[in-house]
Structure formats: C-alpha cells, structure tokens
Image (tube, rainbow, N blue to C red):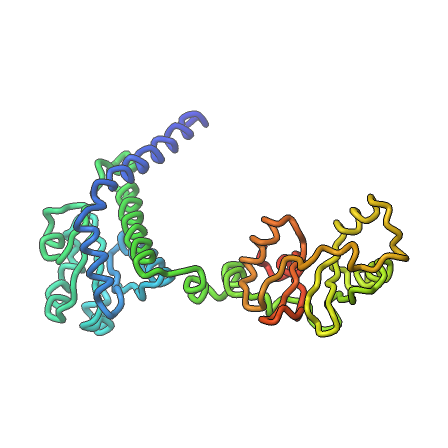
Length: 323
C-alpha cells in the first residue's frame, strides 16, 4: 500500500471521529444537565463501570472526575457481581458506559444497584437498549458509523463516549468552583504540582542571600552588592528594613546613558522607587505571570509592613520546574 493511500486512510479516520464529536453537541441537553445535577446533589462518589473498550473509557473518565473535584473510581462489572459491588454505598452514583446498552455483565448488576437505591447514569450508543431504559438518566453517545471500515472495532464510538464523559467532568468542575489550587492538591507530584503548589516563600532568597543596600550607599558600592549576590538587582531599604526602591541592570544602563558618576552618586538618586513586590504566600505560577507582564527578572518579597523579607528571581522559578 502506498504512502498516499495510508495518509488517506488515516485522514478518513480523523474525519469520521470529528463528525462523531459534532453529533454530540445537540445531546448536551436537559438529560445532560440532569445527570450533572444528580451527581452534584449526591454526597458520595461516582462509581464508573464498563466492559471492554467501554471499560477503558470508564477508567479514564473516573480518573478525570477524581482529579477535577468529583471523587470517583472505576469498578469492573464482572468483579462487581463477585463481591466488588460492596464498594458502592447508598450515597454514591453509578455511571455505566456501554455502546450497545446490552452488556451482560452490567445488566447483571443493575438490579443490585437498584436495590441499593443509588442513581444509575448510562452513556449508551442505543437509547432503546435495556440499560438505557433501566437508567435514571441515559445520555445518547451513538455515532453514525465507526471509523473501522468493518464497523467492528470501537473507534468513533469510544471517542464520543470519552468526550461526553469529559464534558460531564468539566461541567462539574465549573459548578463546584474547583480552582487551580484544588486541582494541584490532586496532582502534587511532577511538573503540575510544582507549578501550582509552590509559593514564593518556598523559593525566595532570604537573609544574607538577598542583595540589600541603604539609600545613601554609593552606586558603585551597590554594584558590588549586585555582583556578589548574582541576581541582577539590589533592593534599597531604610534602617528599619522598609523597602524604598530597587536598582537593576536596567537602572544601571540608564544611569550610564545619563553620564552619572557612579562613585559619587548615592543609590537613592538612580533607583526605581518602590519596585514590583509580592507577598511570601503568592503562588510561584502567579509570579511567573508578573515577571512576564512587567518584563523583569526579579521580584522583592515584602511583609504586611512593606519590609523586605526576600527576593525571587526568574532563575528560581526555572530551577523549581515552574517554567
């Protein structure tokens, strides 16, 4: 088979699945809203189930729900009828994925789910199926055709089911006002956790590591402090540690352009008053945005009284994996 034929076949699959996703848009309807409302009103977890490829979709949707603020886990329907049904409590909600809506392993446990008295939400490709009729809410995820030319391998149907599951998860996230910090608590490891959980106080330079001079310090001596601390700036503070301003590489270039005598000029005459400051509890990710917006490389960290307590540099964010 030629490369051109392979490319055509691959593109046909993508187009088929795009069409399947477009077909879902009218089904974001009252039944969708009812399913979300049931989950929001229940105090327990969402128990997701499904067999085969639908089970793989269910695993992913359960994971997305859990990480997005809706406690959830997957229960294999075959194992459920052999004891794992005990994982479901009266406070939970069951979400079942089945393209045919006739999956025997799921239908076997439906009466037991009903007996427990928990709501059953179904995502099926057959609104006339037994599972759809038994469910409290059925969301139609049927597709016109599979991307598989034989019409056998679940392709477009699993894509549609996954997208609808994601739509439910994100709708619930928004409804719960689930924010970045909440999300980070579910992802404490790796780059995401570092970016969302780290705060300025975890990264800032403090004590002798932060460049600091007084307002009457000669500019030439301030340059020595900047060089020693290697942050490309120095803070200017009064005798009580209150921040008066900052002096950066940019201020140095401007002073040189103005012909200022560095050995005779106190730093207060060439510093930038106040400077850009943050509190020690500011999120590191927020600081990255401030640095980018202001086109600077360092922030002065101050307490509630505007006393300098640290300095945060762009390189600190880089080393911490925030960037």
